[in-house]
Image (tube, rainbow over all chains, first blue to last red; front, top):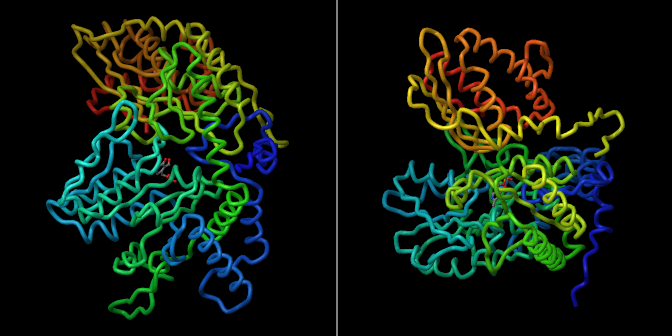
Amino acid sequence: MIQHLHPETIRKDFAIFNAHPDLVYLDSAATSQTPIQVTDAVLNYYESFNANVHRTIYSIGNEATQAYEAARKKIADFIGAEDAASVIFTKSATEAINLVAHAWGRKNLSAGDEILITEMEHHSNIVPWQLTAKETGGDLKYIPISQEGELEDWENCISEKTKLVAITHQSNVFGTINPIKELAAKAHAAGALVLVDAAQSVPHSKVNVQELGCDFFAFSGHKMLGPTGVGVLYGKTDLLEKMDPFLGGGEMIKTVTMETSTWNEIPHKFEAGTPNIAQAIGLGAAADYLNDIGMENVYAHEQELLQYTLNALGDLPGITIHGNPKKRGGVVSFNVDGIHPHDAAQFLDDDGIAVRAGHHCAQPIMQKLGVAATCRASAYLYNTKSDIDKLHDSLEKVKSVFN
Amino acid sequence: MAGKPGYQYVMQDIRELYQEVILDHNQNPRNFGPLESANREAEGFNPLCGDQLKLYADIENDAIKDIHFDGSGCAIFKASSSIMTELAKGKSVEEADTLFDQFHELVTTGSADAESLGKLAVMAGVHQYPARVKCASLAWHTLKNILDGSNETVTTE
Ligand SMILES: Cc1ncc(COP(=O)(O)O)c(C=O)c1O
């Protein structure tokens, strides 16, 4: 039986709602708010065992190393990874994708090879592949999307030439949840690898990288209640072992002579220099927090809010909601007819409502929709129906000012 | 929203930003659309909002005989562009340069000599909204390019 999540109780864990009791925060797809359990974990590291990891023999150094590696294990469990060594801490989802583009893409792709992405990608899953294609002579291909915000005819986009499919798990504009499992099966049958941009899915639903069958999987800590400055790359261990390093420096080496070096074991091979220790520990605490609540409950709560939002905005004349994917998360992009999103968002802000207005780092989608920008409301576990009511009422007000 | 103690939070009235004059220029932009007689053109782009601007000017003997703008964007951008064309039209290049400086001072510092501002005064509210300064400035920076004879597209990033 699904145990319902109580946003009112959850909000008490988020200090921001103390500082701003009237804040209606509907921009979690950009960055989530941070519970005290996470800020406490970060603070506790700095106050109780602040030391570098993997390099010390004194006890607080051991404690730091243990906490850092425990965080890695928590993240591995959170995404269903087979082995903690398959989890690399990066600074963000963006860096995780760039790591693969450099350490795998530049090495394994050559002229005529195809990198297949989709029209609904975030810039962070477009630009690294443009650069890789340019450098390797490979071709960058796009799976088209429909006006509903769903992939179109993706089956026929995968061919023998496809060497990598890099695709978002959940769209940050439409909320579309893509059929990764089916796509990965087809890609693997064609001999291609699959990278999943999970920046929008890991925070909002239960994921399992082994069930999805992906080879690489990237996400950011700050969108899942964790601190900024930490992201994750999951990679299948055999792939990671075969890959050359991304960045060079301390920690990632086994031996260094004047001429050459040998590489450390994974995951350390990909974590050059002092890692983001505090942030990784904070991210581990975020995973604990989400586990306590239950990702099924988070998902169910957001689905309920999503329906409520679609109904509330649908009730207002002159609102265009972009996309209508069948399977979607709690993200709604919309425009108020005749009012630029930045103007609308400015008035919403005046009522304490934070929504995103802009191109959402997804300019190809904006071109497809024929708009320069949209407003986007995205919900998380701390949002309530009353937040959505306020959004509705404030939008009504905006319309009256401009009409 | 209440600020934390020790954190100065200035109450702003959004209607200082969106004054009637601004809403009016947004709804009915003046000097809008291409200008047949133009002998100078410049483009501007604000990647943050996606504001896009094309300016057309007819400048003869160091005087702005006519000036038009075309493009799309938010209300602040549109109104500011419209007001800019009204103000620049009929001015000498030197006078327009002075207007640019006044505008710049106004939106970045919020302070300016109110007497000499005239119509420009409606843009004063922008200063309180740092994220919108770029929207208001695009037309003026593009005008500056025209005055300086530069062909580069203005971007506000
Ligand atoms: C789908 C998607 N991918 C990637 C990213 C990039 O995340 P970050 O900026 O944390 O690297 C985002 C963030 O907006 C996103 O929404």
